[in-house]
Image 1 (cartoon, helix red, strand yellow):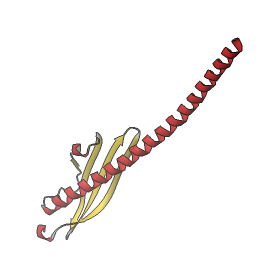
Image 2: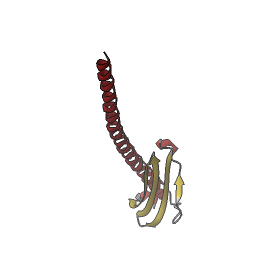
Image 3: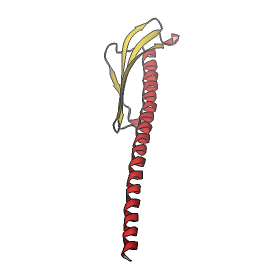
Image 4: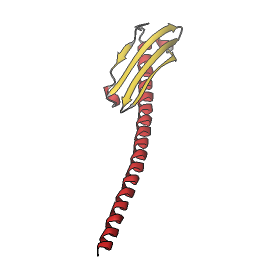
Length: 128
């Protein structure tokens, strides 16, 4: 009778070890998937912020009252990312074209995207 109990106890201990190893492997895979999902989400938020900044810059450049040289921080609460920032800075405005720098920052978990890129936008002829 004791040999059967010892075998069952040994079997239970081995099963617990196997379950522990499987849990470690699955946890590592889940963390990797979460990191990549957060990264993809942040890239989508960054694209939305850049598109919003370009749209705002196009509308602002059409109105002729363009603040050249100083960054304008825009409200990004509608984007949905709690830790996001967007700054648009007009570098120069010349004959139908404007050069703007768009700086974006967004963070989710341990993933952070902080970028600054220059763009050239066309100003509509009616606005000049």
